[in-house]
Length: 516
Image (cartoon, rainbow, N blue to C red; front, top):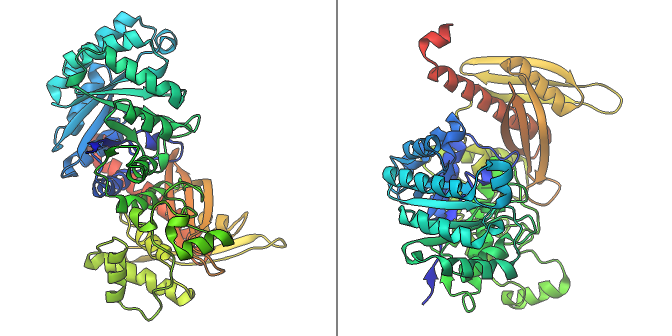
């Protein structure tokens, strides 16, 4: 009989700390809903004290999740813990996750505190958190570089005060499996009240060993594993959720543990996160990379055609990965499209189906072959997380190496239509400048990426941008067989987010502040 391992997903907290991976409230909610469908046990929704936006996101996720535990991160101090408690108080299953650094290097240079001071602060923090929330997790930051006897003393005290989850993180990704396992076993053995808590591991990938260390952590007594979708996170990232889950799923004979993850939702979760953040996985990424189930070598192809098990240790369907086959065309109707989306795991309501069908027909008029990946991109690109203040009605751009590039753009806002033209350094820059003239929002393009969703000369191109507006960064995305069209819509998507956020801030301002 295998033992359950609880999956603690920190995509929306540690993962979102990756440079360029920030999400707005609506995007975080969209990702949280998918994480609940994935059936993670815990969603660490954010760091409420960090900003008003983080607080609102944690609060909104806590209120909406129907079954998943929602955790809020807090440093071991009163203000952080109060803010975290307030953020998760409406959750069906709330958790406060409080932490403090414990290694001598962190104590000396960062905290400037003694071991006894940190012990006292930890006890007070757990006690306060326990008074606000029935479930408290305590983490020792940089645990793998901390003194083992001091850690045991600290964890005993935290458990005594009511912490029921003890996290032992490899914060800087310094451990290797052969030392991490014995370290955990010896540490847990030293904790006299260890039977009163669940132990957790949180590994970073600085040496490329986060997943390996996490699996060793499970084998060494940890029954909670902290990870992120696609392995995003600080620096080199966190342990990859999909790799840990599928390792346990595939190697049951040597890893007698299981999770409650709905593996068929893995690919969808990966694609959604990439679509929201622009942090695309490399082609050869395990489990969710586009080459993970691709075979080019003749020997491999021959083997797979005879029996897929010759070169595939799991089926693509196990992780919800569709095979790229031509199944839809320009004469397909709404019913066929809805059924196809159901096969891909998307149950669309009438409004979403109409939007998807609109984009599908536009794409089918311009593209011979419609693949599953095209359909997934349509649904993720066409169904917005925020309302579009401005809609792109027309864009035409011209450029070349002998003349200055220019663009004409037509936008619609409600019943009004605006037309502007602009010159720029290229067709895309020209279109962005024309959009700026209409919206009055001066945007600066920080990052611009184009990727091919499927194969062929008529492949759907997906454009992802990072745009700075009023010193804040916004992401935008769009897909089209025409790159200028996709670029203009991606840029406008980011600008619409800036407009929406500005409006929300004005609504939050008290009347006297707004009139001042």
